[in-house]
Length: 388
Image (cartoon, rainbow, N blue to C red; front, side, top):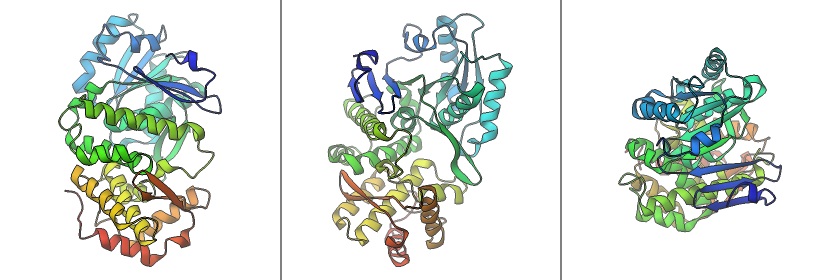
């Protein structure tokens, strides 16, 4: 079913080829799932580009793995002279305003006009940088995402947020700027290193804990998902379920007018864990530590039972994710994290905590997480250990 046919129906609709979203504010977009996205016989990417000029951006690793195929595709499907491909630095340290400005400078140097398209091929960081650049360039132009990582396919690739780190704060500068197209090819996950797979699984565990006990049980049965195959039946179920859950949860509150969001589970302590640790931990690893800490806080506050807490922490461990980081998981830094979240979220804490598997709620006040509870939660995790 096409996006046009669903134009009057709010919500998320799934079909064999992907997902359509129509938000209450009128924002609509589609996330496609396709095979062989860079196969010259696949018309999908070229269809979204149309006859527009394209400036494509890739990180070094993606350029090494897929750069030749991307260039061959553009050469086969687009008009000569209408496209170019450029490599930009990836990694959290390079997710900066300077990187977004560099993207804009390259676009300007190639003559990209307001009808043109920026194309981001890579993981969440490249998508965030290019998406933010597109939101600023000539007051906003189209951009397309080809998501090459698991995090990109289930998280960054299905939302409308873009942004860069600044002022010692994650995603301090950003914009809500929906992509002209977002394309997921499961086969691209086959070249990911195990660490990147685990980081993507952290975001999937997040969705399972807050919304879907069946998905959680599937992860318990298959903690090695995507490490064996990128496009098996189990993997297909996991990734499509995660995409649908994320889009359904985002849809009514796409631009975050309501700051209490269940999808912020794992995203209260993790910004400080990442930043204070000099980005030694990847984003998904910091989210895993945050989820484990939040689960123990929920247990100590009597909001969930010990069994639920144990299942969450055990699953993270079985996947191979850290649940504690000695350098950053200190009472002082985690208190700072709570205070920063309280300030960022309109002076309410909105700490997401599990109340069961597939269920979650909010702790709203700073004083509802007293110092002794925070310290006890950290103490409970410390013996479990950090990065496996």
